[in-house]
Length: 89
Length: 88
Image 1 (spheres, each protein chain N blue to C red):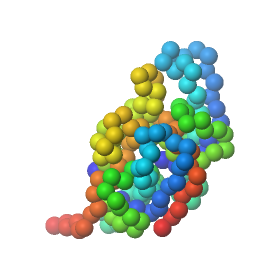
Image 2: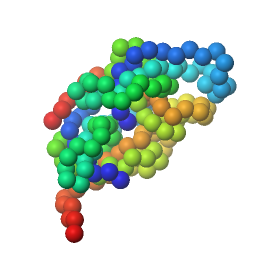
Image 3: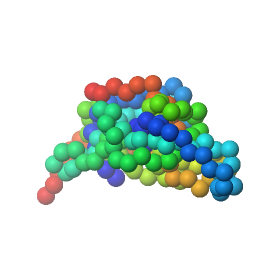
Image 4: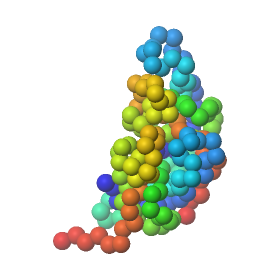
């Protein structure tokens, strides 16, 4: 999984029907020191995350489909949790 | 998924039989600031996207799901046309 920050929301009317009712969020993957890592991507939101929150994102199709709760959904990324704290020893 | 702009189309006469009737488009991935993000790639289209439109596409085997029960051998597919995005 990847730590990321929610940076925006995406609106799409004409889309695959498996996305209907799903929230699409723009997320920026982060390094462990909170600096951006790579390009921002779109993830479906399964947990009610909001802009500016730090989240955990799964980057694999099957898992993302399960997080969305829809079999056969053409997704490859999903937000699976909102991070409270990360502790590094 | 990733944001992208459709920048062209691809026509193939000789191809895998499971690609019959499936539209192939050239897409340029975008950053949220609409700058190019990496190299263009070819993606199948299942939502009626056209050149110049902003879309989002999925990578991996899931790109074939909109064509179920057909299983085209593809690794990228446009699954939505983007109306807009809002940065927080």
